[in-house]
Length: 140
Image (cartoon, rainbow, N blue to C red; front, side):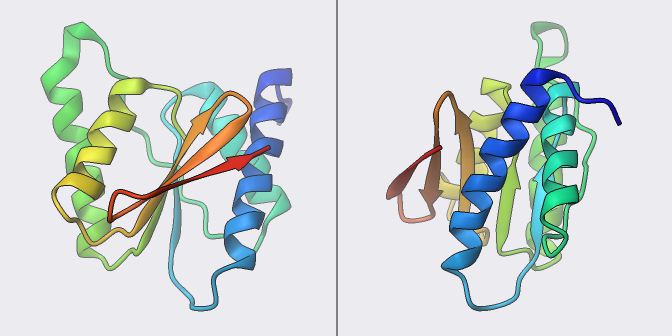
């Protein structure tokens, strides 16, 4: 696959953050990558190729837009609930869409979901959000 410069950069940033996480985790659990947009997919492909020990699942979910607002919100909520029900304890969401991230944070943090943590992409750093509301900034 031919990657754009942004896709390659985002992939390298995500690999840095995932390496940080995996060095600090001892138990086995699932790692899921949600990649709704082309540039997010490129990021996930980079991670999948470079970190073969991480289980990467590319989940198609429409980016939010005013035209499809509620239906997309429900799709994201259903996706997260499906992973929780299957026993996933760590959900890694690769998304540049603010609405998807807000919905995910609500699903995971505010309602006390089973998923313990999530990573939110931000320029130059990652924010690892814990289920108790704490957060850890990881510079890249």
